[in-house]
Image (cartoon, rainbow, N blue to C red; front, side):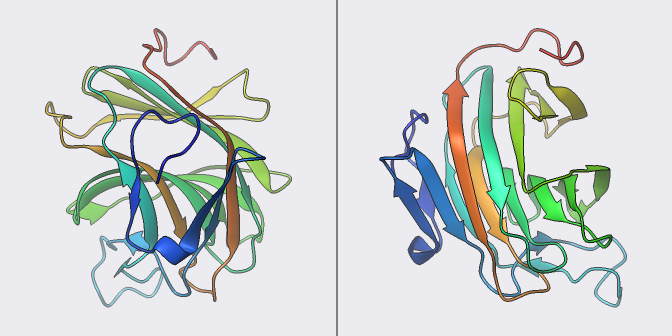
Length: 204
């Protein structure tokens, strides 16, 4: 699939879940029922969140070098942990999710998950409303996740590395509904810029 604003092809594991509205420059997704990518660090017997590896994704290989990947995300939340996601993917046990997710408090929340064999789970803050801007930036082999309410001033959520070799990292979108029957998600204002973000922490 070719998306306006992204200079590389994207492929999906569920073609029926994704469509691109060219007139609105909007990517629409439908999360599959009972779907997620999560490897619970407490093991299969944990009751807090089920380990699943079946969510729908739309991913491609970005150009080498530094970049900024941006999208505004809107989610029609219905069930706990419904989310629209920007994703970095290596393989089935190594990936990152930057989730706009429905929290146990029944509020949208900024959440990030870094998985390297097992998943962590980091909650940032809740959001009033069903829309937010997200950005993934890469400097060398280091990634940063930022969120924004206006697409201008950005708040740092997380900095991390997935190893020195980034050549095989995929980038794109994910849609999930771990406890529900699916939800609708839209991504717009999509941009990919092969530009280095000089300072992760100054709000730019």
